[in-house]
Image 1 (cartoon, helix red, strand yellow):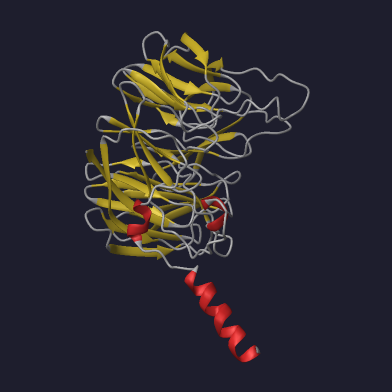
Image 2 (tube, one colour):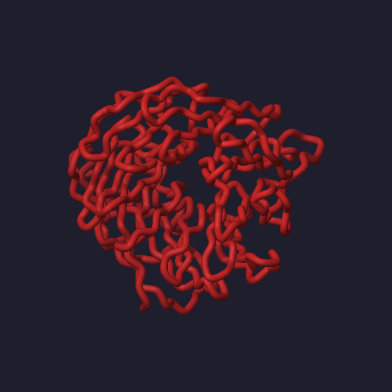
Length: 404
């Protein structure tokens, strides 16, 4: 009996398993309500870059310059890829897990590692220019100008380092609450100020030369009985447009702030992502998964899209006439900028092996392989050739979106 039972069971198992190629991603199993598609979504190329961030809260996003994509994986590898086809031009190994990358500025790359070091690399070949010890770990890409590099670390500090040799110029420390969302934003570097959000719910403008506070604006006030209810982190990167700073807080507000620190408007908008701007609106992914548009002048509600609620969508990005975001299951969504209508969706991550259990949902049948997180949390990067997407599993894709 054993002689035929095992082959039969093996055949039945293999019949329910499959390794799905890219075209399997065209199948729509998102479970969203039907809509009229007006956007065509095509994956131009995809490549695997070592290990992805998985469940770790780090912000790895590619940078693009002159047709070259610069990216990093959590293992410590930094890559230069051709934007047109994804082919590798060079790679280098920092031999330490990367937690914040990649920033490109004036021919140099800046990458922060888990051991608390900031690395400056030559963008032409990945060779080391210098490395310096930070005050703590950085989990968001750094900012740079012609003279200095500015880093926000998880210990509540914003520090400036000389671009020529990595020597620290100044460091500002903001008091940390008992509990915070593990994250920071990239500092916004202006002509006179470095603007950053903190876990206290405040946005501060620091003097770019001296590192001393010039003004602060509170976006959220800790309220509630538990420490979780009192979380008010400003984890997104402030946005600068037409002389106005836009920022948003968790359990707080989204606000427009003048360069002198005067608040032009404040509206409800709890989020842990960065805002995007296009078509005279500020767009924000809220903590419940809704996507909301605010008028840039008055802060008035323009529209709210609730179709992605509870799907853990990531940061919104503007691309052409569209808005683009992703979710924890590996779907990419396209929204209309004018009214927020859902215009397209596609499963862009590769599907793992699966077992088809009878009378079970798609979510039960598709299993993570070896604990891999198949979602997409890293911010999207819009380029002239398409949108760059870096998945939690380590895949980098270029996605083209056009009118259907």
